Length: 153
Image 1 (cartoon, rainbow, N blue to C red):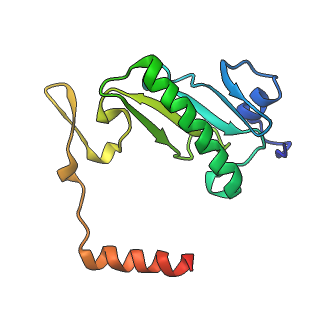
Image 2 (image 1 turned 135 degrees about the horizontal axis):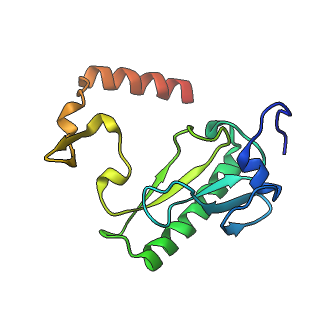
């Protein structure tokens, strides 16, 4: 695990057992543990044991392994925690700890994983407000898709 000696990473400390964690899965490449600040009970995360800051910097085989482990945990979560309406969400947002992580959330409502950009408060309740999001033109969508498609080639 390479880590800048000037930066302290709590996830690296968990991997090296210098910090406690409620571990639910571990192998030679990854470790999965409960989130200290869950949106819903059961929320956890899968991290590579190697310190990698950005999820997009993870090698393809390792990111596929992280998702496979996440899928196994997600299916188990759905069966054992029984979130209603039986939805499990996966989030990679890159904030919080600067160590790549896949967050797995048992969802009870669509607000459990969504952007604040498409939420509103009405009568003290958080409600979806997708109409707040701007809808790009098809031309704009096609140009962006073309740019990304060409860059992938």
